[in-house]
Image (cartoon, rainbow, N blue to C red):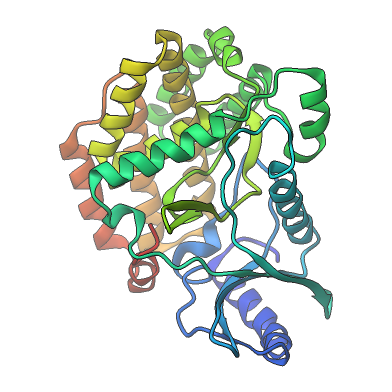
Length: 366
């Protein structure tokens, strides 16, 4: 697709839809007017610790009235990602040491046409978004999802033979290498000495505790376990993104979820931390803190990467995001939560700087 800029993204979407819409129409699928996964800040989104390609994620309806999700790509890496996600989904339901598994949306079709690889899945309708549910409901569903990941633990050579090629495996050395990559990137690309200093402290603390990180490796973990990647229907949790599953530290999915809830529901963040402190070994709490530190360094790196692809208000917003997550990381290094006044001030600024299109995209997303 070329450089990851808003204009390039919009041109890409326009060109792809011109070919894709007639293909879908011939199969009786009409696209919805509102397409949250191609609008707003979507053009910036790139995973920096896993391989991902360029693709469109669209919402549509079949001629029989069935709501569907369409994932489509002509990009080589995008096709590899879709095929990888499918293999992950299939293998997770087959491996003989998975005691609990996620439900997955029904795949209605997978086909190629005009160099597109197109996956069509049934859209999972839910009565309310995750963040609109009561705190007890959120806690229960989140804990279920996190425990489901932990229940899949590779402990034998046979287990690793089943999973390595498809899911991949992260060890403490893998995490250290990724953290080193964040630090090196920031040293050369981040103008804020404060940010670089805090991340350097975090890296030192993380690398000094690799034994604890390795102690809890070998578990299934979803590296992007946040509400927009799952939906809840009929009291079941449906995972929407299987491509972000890997075998690594059991607390990586926890860390991603808790960092997300720092912004969206600090009460839930606190409840889940208390659950670990009250019900797990102290070593697990240490591991969780280490993985939160790692993931916070990652999100800071992510937003520094976006600065070259953003201008105006969005550039200012991403700069504010870098400093906000630095504050969160600084608090986490002291095993405390960032002050609520810092969160409130950031959210107020964020809502001022967000585009109207992005505000619309965010509605009911989580």
